[in-house]
Image 1 (cartoon, rainbow, N blue to C red):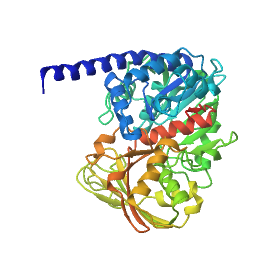
Image 2 (cartoon, rainbow, N blue to C red):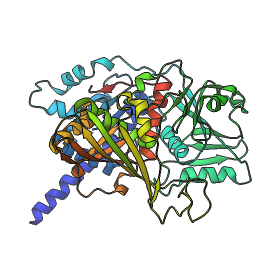
Image 3 (cartoon, rainbow, N blue to C red):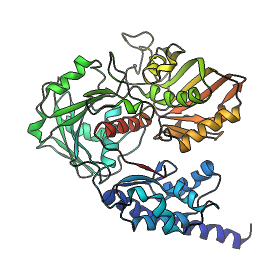
Length: 481
């Protein structure tokens, strides 16, 4: 390679890097002041680094076949910043792709006026008043939800994390809780500043004042004494799973609704956002966000059942070990889970196959399921062995799921990858409920084997946030449609 060519590549990189750096404050300002969430083919740019933004542009090549020009996306972002738009989720990547389509004959200003007409109505608040949120329990999911809520603080998200409820209260508890929020062995450090106020027993994270409350029972708290009213209680403990148990939360002053982050018992609605969230009613007081596995598999199953049909199948969950297992061999009430989680693959049961029917009743009785816990701390996989309603091909099946991941109502739930080098750790922090590994798909006549990855912590937590937003009436339009 000549010296001139080397300099050319480096200079082009510096130019793109410079533009990406200029995008960061624009993305932040649009979110904080206007409530506009900027995406790049589904990837959030809020709080992204310069390299994150450049990688998101590169990702467009996988999705749309061309690498998006940073010059053009920056120009469009500036134009959007000069419009008087109401809160929404704007996919800058898709807008740019549509604008650059040869069929488009409009200039950028006219194009954006046309595409964003539905929100070109001036600034609006998505909710009249901020919605108070309380996390009951502060384990793996609770802490990730806290991070997501804090990260989303702004005009576009009126949900406010007001309190965390935990058992304990022993000396040093507050410092330890704050430390667990600040540092995470899987998901890395907290993106921001965390301080504690020992006098009032509170954590202040990026300016969010979060009261830490100690209680042994959901019905023993008066939230109003902390200035908390009509709160959405998100129960992360998994202790109370039926209507009677979860209903205890509603007996405490200052509460209005309850969301369970585990499979529910009885007639409580199990919501897989993107699939059956239309069942959420304003009158619902208690809801369930199903399980991480159910959220990963149901969107994919829905696409296949709607297009190809599913006669029967078996779901095998290859799941990261959880806190329910033992680190070393010791007594456990469940079969096999007493054996050391970091050293063994452990066969266990899963209710995911039966749970599918709660979100997709048409698949009731058609699926079986089992699970294997494996020695990794996060990111799991669902292996789907399906007998379809008709013959298909690898190309058709992957094409259906790729299209769903880009342009369907399930684009936030279904991720799609063509990489032949992907491994589980590459997907830590992924926001989709499940990611189809298209390179591993097997099809023979009407039989198909699919591999769907999912971050059983972050992917699921993002699904929980989506249910929370729906429950509180925080619904932002997605553009382009």
